[in-house]
Length: 87
Image 1 (cartoon, helix red, strand yellow):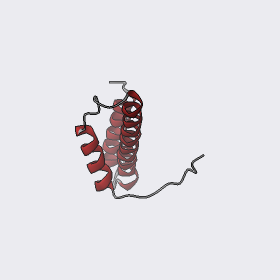
Image 2 (cartoon, one colour):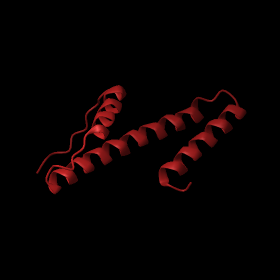
Image 3 (cartoon, one colour):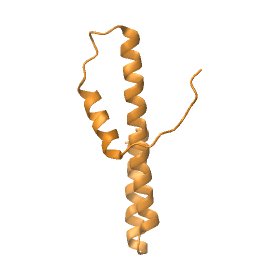
Image 4 (spheres, helix red, strand yellow):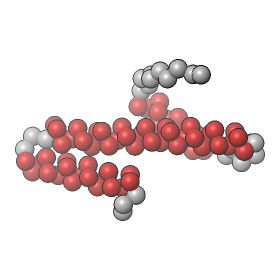
C-alpha cells in the first residue's frame, strides 16, 4: 500500500503539467494505461479548479469595502456554479 503524502509544487508547474498532458494522445496505449492517464489528468484538473476557487474566495476576504466584497462574492459563486456544472 502506498502512503499518502502531500507535496507542494509551484502553480506554474501544475499548469504546465496539465497543459502538456492535455496534448498527449494515449489512444494507442492499452486501456489500463489510458484509464490511469485519464485518472491522473482528472485529479490534476480537479486540484487546479480547487485552487482557482480558493483564490476566488480569498478575493472576498481581501476586499476593501462592501461593494468590492459583493463583487468578489458574485465572482466566487459564479465560478463555483460553473465547476459544479450548474450553468
